[in-house]
Length: 209
Image (cartoon, rainbow, N blue to C red; front, side):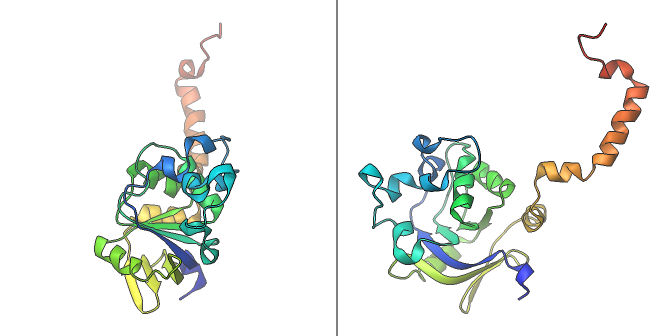
């Protein structure tokens, strides 16, 4: 498999609870910045820490083999709740490249695409099959996520995930709505210049004259 075809390879952590909302992913008390940085420490803060910010050893991300997991395998309706884009920011800053689930909160899904995080939708039966591979620390070793082929491989097991072609290309080329618009910058500037001649009154400010 060509390296460029892969979206990643590494360990996957399994989250077996359904309906994990964005306030669980990044609690409101952790929203200490409006930038995309400084949020990784707050990821799943209510579960990761005990009092006084002491790591909870029972939480899946705190188990020794899972601390650098690249993927999350989540039960249904991951990322439901508010439109908090910080949820995608916190996951990507932590190092998560893809979240794999039967379905997602729709706003979280769109925020993920915009921020380079792959929300890979799989069949419920495939979720159960992958989850059954988890070891004693709640993780799966050596998972490959192939964005070009639209499939996830662990050993001899391969399952497909769904993603439309536009979103696939955005992730492969690391572009978003703004970047796609800027590809047409010359045409846009040409239109504006011509429109200034055709309709000069439209381009005057309210305070001129």
